[in-house]
Image 1 (cartoon, rainbow, N blue to C red):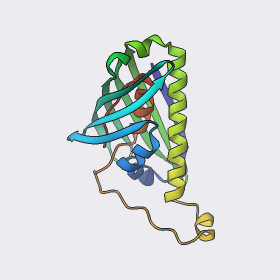
Image 2 (image 1 turned 45 degrees about the horizontal axis):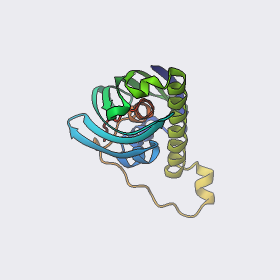
Image 3 (image 1 turned 30 degrees about the vertical axis):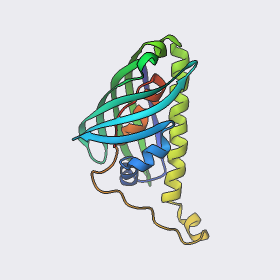
Image 4 (image 1 turned 120 degrees about the vertical axis):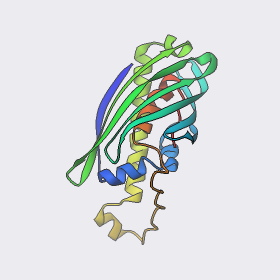
Length: 193
């Protein structure tokens, strides 16, 4: 399966980088995510519950990050296993590029699957992957609006309580959500922090 696309974000490249490296933000935005934890330097484990057509399972997986160019890009390798439901593996590349007062997130994912997940059909898998990615983006956009309201909206509302800043290097990379959507759909659980 190949999946690629771009998404405009209303936040700056740095704000997007920080949010996409915050495990709490990602856990809240990735549909079905049960846990995300570090297992080593640039290595993570993730547990995700998913359903693709008639196949439902709890998947466990791992991710290894490489080519980290903060705050603009990552490359990652991932693999996951959902027992009898199937398995998946692949790579993803994510880029954040400044665009006016916001930024653009671009991604390219290449993944393969096997087992029952692969038997439901490529069209269904592609549709669920796109739906999961859209769900992530909607949740992520809402969280960014909450954390970084537009100036007019911020003045019109009650005093905002600042969101806690994530510690440098303590969060999940931007590609995490893209891979999560694809892996979730493919029945792959993967790791991030």
